[in-house]
Every structure is written in C-alpha cells, then in structure tokens.
Image 1 (spheres, rainbow, N blue to C red):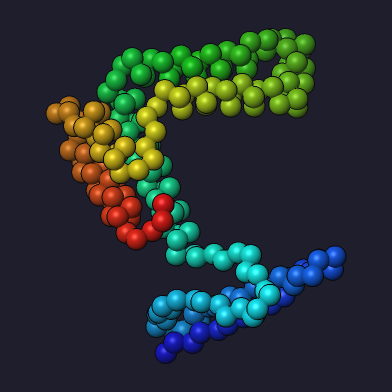
Image 2 (image 1 turned 60 degrees about the vertical axis):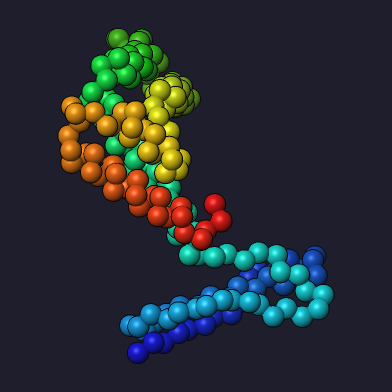
Amino acid sequence: MPRFDINFEELAPDFRDREIPLKLTGRNAGTLPVEILAVSPRIPEGVTLLETRDSSLLAAKSKHTELCEQLNNLAKDVMFATDEAFRNRVIKLQMDAAEKTFAEFSGWLGILKFYYRAFRGTYLQHMRQAKEKEQALTLKIENSSDAKRVFEDVLDQPAIDSSLKKAFLFKTEKLANLESADWAW
C-alpha cells in the first residue's frame, strides 16, 4: 500500500532579508511506487522561486558520470596492458614522483626532513602533480561518442580479450541510452 509523507519545513531564516526559505520534501514510506507527474508550485504574486531541484535529473547525471569513469578506467587498463610506450611513460612518471618524495631519505637528518616535508604538504603536492601528468596521458571519455571513438581506436583489436570488449560495448550502450533520454545535458 502506498504511503506518501510530505514534509514542509522552514530553513534557517536570515532576518535581514525579507525572505523565508522553505523546504518541501516528499517521501514514499510504502511498498508500492508512487508516480509523480509534475510538481508545479503555485506561488502567490510577488513571491520569487529561487531554486528547484529535480532529483531524477541528478540521478541520471550521476549515473552518466559513473559510467564515464568506468569506461575511462577500462580504457586506461587496456592501454596499460597492451601499449608498451604508454606503460613506460606512466611508470616513469610514477618513478619520478617516488624519487622526488624519497630523494633525501637517509640517516636521521633525512628522516627529519621527510617528516618536515610531510607536514608542509610537499609530498602531497608531488603526488598531485604526478597524478595530473598521468591523467594528461590517458584518454578522457565524456560521452558516448568519445567511448565509441576510444573503442574503435584502442579496443577493437584482435589481441584484446572479448570479455573486455563486451563490457566496454555494454557500458557504451548504456551511456548512449542515458544520453538519448529526454534529459537536458
């Protein structure tokens, strides 16, 4: 049986303004789904609606971002496994970052320098720079057409495992379906 709870609460007011922020939330506490066709607030004259949030759009955007991230990781893993030049560049970047971090780590004075730089955030900065350089080397997938292009250029080779190809194509298709929905990207 559907049970829909509606909560209307006042947020922390700013007494200097002539506005009262209010929050309207709806929650389905029942077992059956509740379909909401549209929420059109009836606002009296002189009142301005400042912000509305569509959680279904936010969910679709977060799913889109998650799929793009998964496709980026798959493409990076395949490139790391198959492209020796790419693998050597990534390893060199990581080795350079490690050398910068532990260059003066010898003896008591080296240990003190290490802790001093750790507290200053120098090592964290070295690691961030290495990560940025590594991300500059990798392919960035932001939509389904990018994913299709990466598949054609990188993954559509006989040496690549068919299960990886299927997973990549499946996620690309999900991304294309998500983008073809009536969302305002």
